[in-house]
Image 1 (cartoon, rainbow, N blue to C red):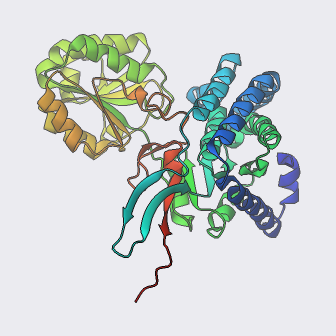
Image 2 (cartoon, rainbow, N blue to C red; image 1 turned 120 degrees about the vertical axis):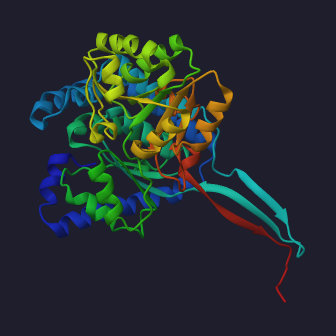
Length: 432
């Protein structure tokens, strides 16, 4: 593939850019057709080889990452964004292990979903098949490059990767390692392509190609996602913000609640499944809030709260309506005291982003009511929101966490990158 700088120069006008992007999409379509019939064991072997290539190329990947980190100040990245961008040997090993984890998953392609025999004698089979070509637009996280490529390939899809410019060197080097392994395995290397121009108009060009691209997955800021939804001519799998909640019920074990809240908020703050809001039942607020506020303070987390919270912990700042609806991705959390589990549910359904919400309680009826009524992709009971992750939920690496309802919701792994077709088997039947 051409270098980013070379292609940016070549795509100096709109016509050239359109032709360049269309050529990428056409190669992806051809690769998807070839990949659709590849057996699962061969795809798994290819992914294991890709993981080995990433490990073998760790020095080159880290050198590329240093170029991205050197440029980070010029992009005005926050501390959380720099953390997501940064690679070291341990994180590169994690990337390789994530690719290997996908290789261990059962192949979803060819799965028989349903079968029936009609009065005519026709056998009707509903069979899982790849989506085809995926256009994936994502933030500046190099690990996501490998995760998305692995998940797409395992599900028999070709993927066009459009990562953030801040991680351009890291992503390009990871893709080079993976494509080398794909080619060596005898699979079409164009099933994984990185968009090699920084021109923002390239996104708009791809969004018009519904004849070649089957689905687009935007993963980043809300402005990007709304733009994609407005311009895309193909279906969009949306990954909106992660305003995740922890609700501490009146029947909560407060030691457990403290541990879960600290983990959900502080284990890694700059990720979409980190907690951004804490709700506490009024009956336990006087015992819980001073303790959890002090614990959050030890992690340098700024707390803003409602009036009831501020009465119990005077040092807490004042929370606005916007605070309760904000995904901070950093050391800040909003807190509110609620009168009941229903009040917690109403708060989450009003301010939340349908991503991940957790209840801490020993009351099964309260847990059941919360699970049934909270409108969220993943609901946790007595567990940290940080477990909403493909690897932690047994899906291997994920391509995103969908806050949508169709066709996939929650962590999107290999199965979520498939659709189905009907296969009808006859013995010469004709319709009268």
